[in-house]
Length: 218
Image 1: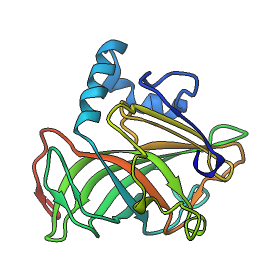
Image 2: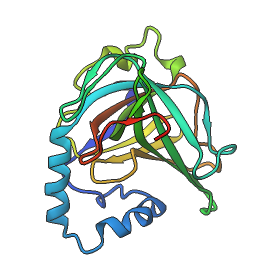
Image 3: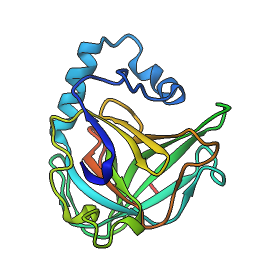
């Protein structure tokens, strides 16, 4: 496996051996309340069937010591992507999202990333759903086979969950199609979750159903 990281791919939904952090689950409780696990699994499979793989680079550092819940972040698409349920996203399209930071645990910090929309070059924006399935720091990519933009097969529609231990140094990654978050990063060292500018994220992406293309600022 790439980089020696332990990767778990499973069709089991959100609360298996590597359950997502509690703060991420709490943010989703109003959505999942009253929904059976079987219904959630069917819904996740349907969402996964609409998704396609893409690679993005972070534009700026994301450092849990310096950001706050609700802060925005941006990433840039590294190759053209034709959405199954939406328009083509050209190379250079900007994906926008928000963060949630949890510092309440005495021995760890947890950072959730949520991509929310794609900003097209003509100024239009598309609401999106994206799940992170792989990541690499920029200094690991040259000459090591870690350039995610040149890889394929990191994700398939049969992958509903990814738990990657030591995805980055000292940071575990937990992602699930059923989650509203794109990924949750957990470190066992206080405030040690940091993604530097240029970090690559491989994502499964789709347009959010029932949302139309909007003009910038709408």
